[in-house]
Image (cartoon, rainbow, N blue to C red):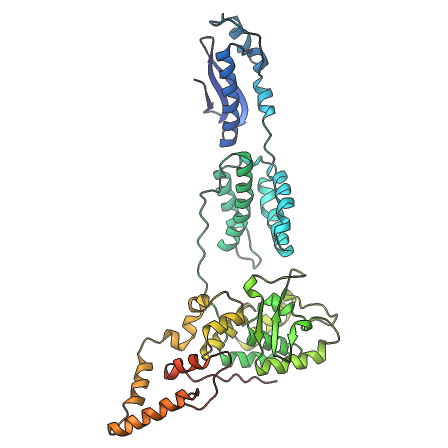
Length: 456
């Protein structure tokens, strides 16, 4: 039985079979990979079938071979039937040629772009043009092997990132993720194994959130330029994402019900659907937010459809805001450098620390559930991190106060009446967004609500 083998000196594939008792080897210019082996094995199967049937024509199959005449001079052991020549070159040509990586990417984009957001398509094109096409563009998709992918990944690790440092593992994984998608689709269509099939992503270090404290929050809002004060205060107190704040329109502000309707986001210069379905939400206005939006309407209400905009009425450019306002402000105040996105984390920690129900906070932030809150923000919330038993100590101290049991019983009964009335022990109202049951459950185990008062 014949086989497809590779030369040791150059790695090119060749046919190895027997014809009329003679061992025959026919060379090709095909590199040794799974796709080429599969194509050659199909051709070899046809050759052997015709040899068995006595219809194989060596000269037609390998017209440039020096072995063709020698093989034809050997008498056949089986009477020849009418020849049906099958040339290996013709057989290979009859196989659908594998497209180049560049050609397949063009098809892949055209077929799938209807599924993607415009901003995602821009990011894909940037990744393809900047990294993948220069590396793999002219190679047939089936000729890309795992060694090529690993070498490409190693080169990515040496490339500079946007901040001047080398590309992060997260960015490298994102680039390889696009390559993985393209090759997985190509492998499925052209019957080869994707070289990325068993490639593990690089490990990404867990980064801690860096929210601002309440004092730092007030410092930011009182120090920033007046024309940016309401924008920064809005983001610190609502927890909206950058694109949600920049894409917020006046038609989504409901002053009557005090709701901010998050329905769109502004990404890469265009209005888009929100990040996820759960991001479509209604945010309750606190009093400071209500007041700043009233002020903002006087400034931009007639100028633009966007709540926060530049002098031309266009949405705020995040890079311009970061470079010219945000980072200079942090340097001026001596605060650690952090991205504007930390304003979202600040709102979450302020809500949780003030005793708001996690489910309510999750809805405000646009999370599908509260699980992420406990994973990301637990160390910033006193009641979620206390491990010293101080809460039960305070509770027992109120129930078993010094004095006779009768007085203690009377005091306890009075406290229970206050609880039953739906109030807390300080006489304050339940915090916004919390249910009476949630506030009662907090009891003395929760810190008193934090009243957020910011300068106008």
